[in-house]
Length: 294
Image 1: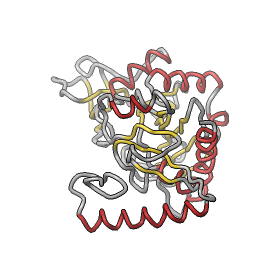
Image 2: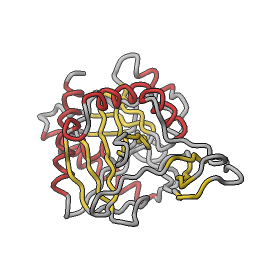
Image 3: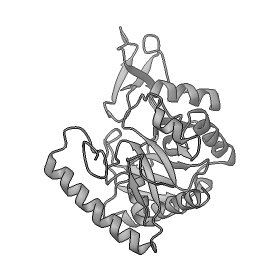
Image 4: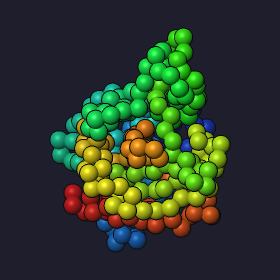
């Protein structure tokens, strides 16, 4: 028996009542999927952490009728390295699995923002990082750790750099209407099934507040050369499945990869739910193709 759950290993410190509820739900869902699939249920190992219900992979599995677990003793079609951490260590369990089965993001061990910018510069020939001690003008200061959202616009030069932060150029990605536009690319197995155009209200550059989301193909938004470099970047940073956050500068029309996520979530509200669900369907289709070919 799993020490933090019967079927799955839930996060440390989860109350017993919540663990029990999750295990009961897992049992009934597993039973339902077993009969629905004609006794041929497909399971995905998501390891070592158990994904939240908002995780894109959870939604994909639900849509496709797949079971998912973080119990490596289960029978599964393929595995995903899923750990909520910017820096990961090599995982012996997953490395052993990879000798026989496909493991997505097996080598995705570091997504800190300094590395993201360094790999981006290697592929695209330019980057975002500046020296705040000598740079003159406005810049963005943010933690190198993923998902902290502690962004700050500062005036440079400054007297001293702070350890654990990256200093980057401030990219003008305002729309004519005054909104902030960024792009989120989904990546899976060297394919880009969709691009989300995310419009943030004025004054919400670094907040997770969205006015609207539009779904586009990569070809509708980026050039063939840009797409080629996105895939080259993802290969160099060892992302088989995940998301890239991309900005386009109004003045130069250059694109910048500013963030990488290897445990992506997908959220929506009623105003743009249809667009997000359309994107999710495309990703689910690519994921199904990957699973069926294993």
